[in-house]
Image 1 (spheres, rainbow, N blue to C red):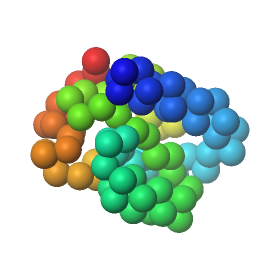
Image 2: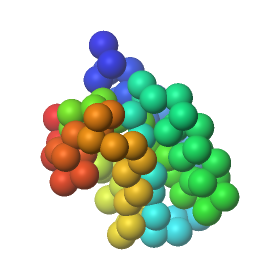
Image 3: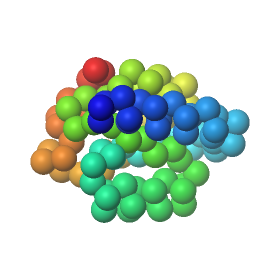
Image 4: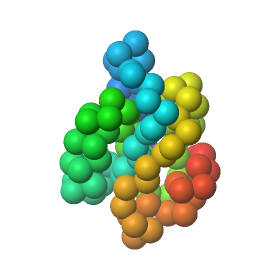
Length: 95
């Protein structure tokens, strides 16, 4: 259920912001399960005109990686330690 929710939220956000994205070359990734990381990440991403993606703790949904690639992000900020996001997320392993 969490994987599906992360994918749905990301796909909807991607559709709404595709044309408005400043495409700063940055992207932020957080788990949808950690309120503090998502709150801080949302502010930082908005300040820089960058997208914020939610992901399950163990990997990136294909839709997230596709959107990051589409926007040409060369810097990806992973917010949260390995207790909330695994090294697979840091290594951009898709689920």
